Image 1 (spheres, rainbow, N blue to C red):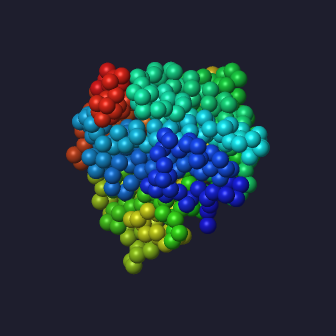
Image 2: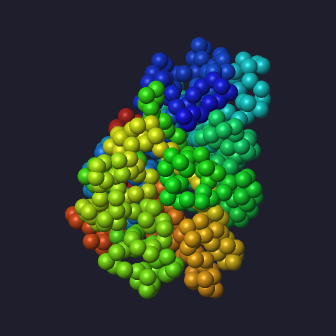
Image 3: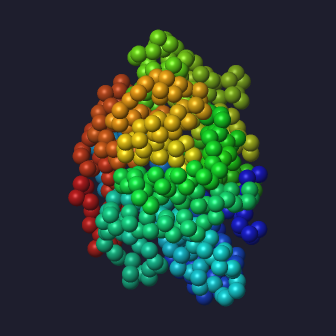
Length: 516
């Protein structure tokens, strides 16, 4: 049974997504004199921050509702949100309003987690003297800073300008104006620099899932990549170089990686962990599927499917191996690990097994992360499950470093890292297929590799934004032959979520984004 235990005291997976465990006191008032008196109090408060990540609108997702971050490939050109009312579909079509419930839920879940992180940061040093060793306090503080940075990075990407709250607030302090995107990013970087110096390189097996130095350095690299900071002490190259020395490695089986069998592998830098069994109920739903068709609310787009090369490393329109009547044959193995093609079995524990018939508006189904049978805890495919969601994995670190190398002109070193990622799935090297390439060609090779390696991991929209390619992605989605779907790029309005109208209504200092 997978559990996270801190100092043998608090089991994270006893904390359900509905957060009933904390209802005995107010979120912002948990620091009353009856709290922060024991070691257990400190770990309970820290676990509350981790539990916030498990929310439906963040990393848990839904089978029929706002998909959360596991469904954010619906924002852009990777996937089609067939149930458009869930949020991504109407965002893509430009019909979302400022009182849209799903984006408001994301806002609320992010700031709930931020409030809990602030609680820990503000109070960990107020514990009675001698209760915790200084190293333990620093570890707790480092984890809280890492988690706050992760939450605020999501705020920065999806809402851009937003309130920057770094301490507990009384009610009379709650109405604050927006801070700039730049101010939020500066705080994120400060938090991650401190966290990376405070967190340990490794943890015992029974604490797998708690943040480590590798997690902080990798998130820091992601933040700096988004900001285009490649060199220097806190540039992507230096940060990723440190991660490369921490013992991570690529899991040999790409398809198996995105199942419970791969959850504890050396590839996982940081994940949001889940367990749903007879004793706990904090399950996720992003790995769930329908019985009649796989994952109906996130359908792979044809332009993504066509971007997976043939097994000889050539684009499908150039490879003699590609057969349009059998498009899944002779392809990059990541295609068949991520996508259901017509004729693929998608449920294995039914009699007979269920075969995908292409009954999807796009003609394809999502396979990556999706259960094919009841899981190890007996959870059915259409119910909550126990799959962890990988926020950062080592392949992403390699590709972040490759991108920074390509952007700074070190084409050879960038190609070497891309080759490592390709070799895991037995795809040909850059030298064997693309040959000797220039800097801009290498940048495009890395961007392509990110797309096929990281599809359905919630990173595509972030990548498109930082590359300045959101409009092109909308055009690709609009040009795909997909049912009743009309992506409509509206400038900045298609690149930032609205501040929830309910927040604007109660906070006189909060002003809506000009795009909205």
